[in-house]
Image 1: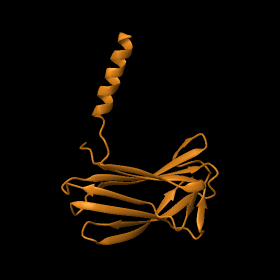
Image 2: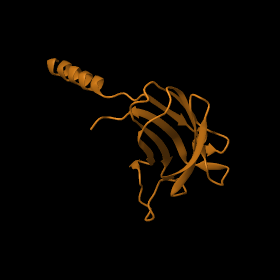
Image 3: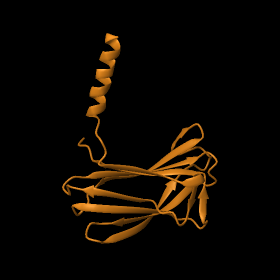
Image 4: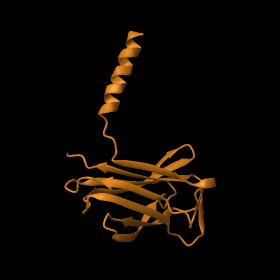
Length: 154
């Protein structure tokens, strides 16, 4: 019993020391289908413009996903109302068919990283993600996560 309590206390201490993200949200798609009209939104606050942030966009698909990549359009709206819209490619598999991301069972998680970015304004930002392919829907897509973390000093 004492060993179990000691182990619990150690786990509690180490888990409370872990850095928590500034923001993290996952959007799950109905019926594993990302329709062109579905545009996940992520709204987060930036309180300090003097530090750098790491942003991660995580896509989870099944191993039955039919393409080797997925183009997305990322629209970012700043606190002053300005906006920018950029295309990004998420490479899901290599030319030989091996997975770029992490595969667990029939799920493949592929991340797109934006590291060490400074934001120009304090306030609320909104990121909207659209799927950017010519098909009206993409099948075998489970969810799309967005995470904001303060950049750790090395």
